[in-house]
Length: 299
Image (cartoon, rainbow, N blue to C red):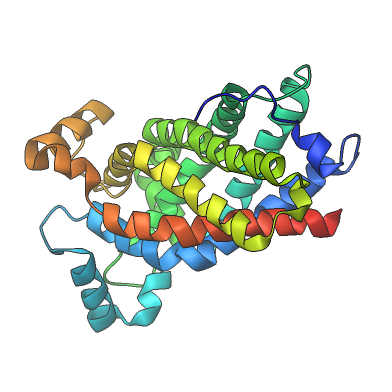
């Protein structure tokens, strides 16, 4: 994608410049988008996490995970830990979208037209801001998704992590989360905004006139752009966050990366990639569609 100096600003398309409730609308619409993302993507995410965290060879493939989940734990196992992401991911996505919108609207307000670099940097800022919240939320979520016995709830998991490792335990995996969120959100929002702007210019329409099915396609493309560029960081994060609390296998981030490579080579950093890519299209299509539709309804 090349930078296009002719791209108009987001505010020119939405007609919402000067709206004193804009931040509140961004946060609310982002929350709706996050809830949509969880409801659509949770089964794929549970499958991905089971593959990523499998260090014993229990699961042979994506299909094997699905079969064993259904056989041993039932269909509802795909939605293990859903309450945490419904609350947490809703908050995370609201931060992502609101910071992204703030960056475009205020930080780069001196630009008559936003370019691709500015879209990318807006996304990076949104991802870094979100990573501080996303790291502990995903840590709890992953612990819930990978428990094979018992029925611990989110508060039980939080207490267990805190009692063993304190606040640093809850924040375990922050660095790979920040890498994934920063660059990932940069690619995510850059891709979506590029496609939206191209559509508005090519068809001479406003943003609000883009049909829902095209918004879904652009959201799906944004999801692919993110995951194809940051997946190894997500693997490292998942390994750190599913490690034994009392006798951890990984002593540091570097140790985790080294052991993954030693055990499985480069392929070890792409374990569980199939369900992630299968999830990317529907989950992110739902996210952006829900966000854009909510913003249109809010006016």
